[in-house]
Length: 289
Image (cartoon, rainbow, N blue to C red; front, top):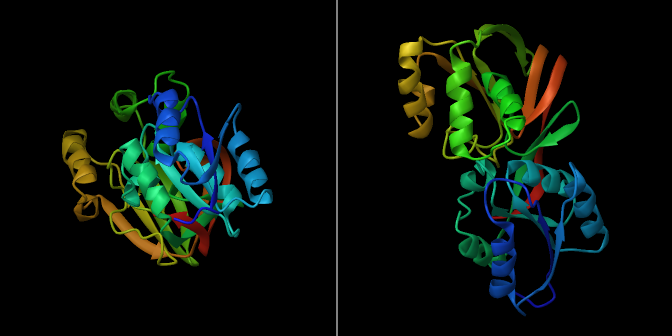
């Protein structure tokens, strides 16, 4: 990699359960004098967006999100339609975006991947003009995202605990959906609009989704009998959810979901009570893969 590349690392000190001090030490150890880099820390929600925009103004070649999918979303949102590339050092609870790109979960290996500086162009999406990189949706996954945000403890065990405790009382809802003007009415447990293939922790909610095909994979999971919960979970983790009779999928570039109660953007909970207008933005983000 050439000396003149300029990289800014944006570290979310509270994402996931990884010790960020150890990550910073590895950044110094791996990069050393190989590259011009700076490390900055987020101090409040959405601070990463401001820091990434400032990095663009300062002519950074790449901005690296050190955190989970929420941090990746903020940094990536600021870089859309810019020349700067998004890099990821995964250190969140799920790391779905990084896992889709096969970015190593090992910090040192992820840093060496950044040094290789292999750039691809990926698609992004927007929900009512708010960007997302991986997934958006409504229903049970959104409900759990809201509970998880207030839970206090991060990590996969906390997420599974919440999902299990909430499942039995969660009611499927009637939805009116339009995919490229095709109307779909369905009683659904959850609806996912996927640009990438998984939520995180290798839970593959849309196994065939691609970041580079210009299409969303829209998955509709109907309410299923409680006795089949182990089967649905197994299918999520072995990439066979699309083979369940309770799961239906369609591809498209524009999606409208009418009057949702709440929703999520890349796993971050959002308040609903409105229609979701979801649009594809093809080849709009440079990413270090």
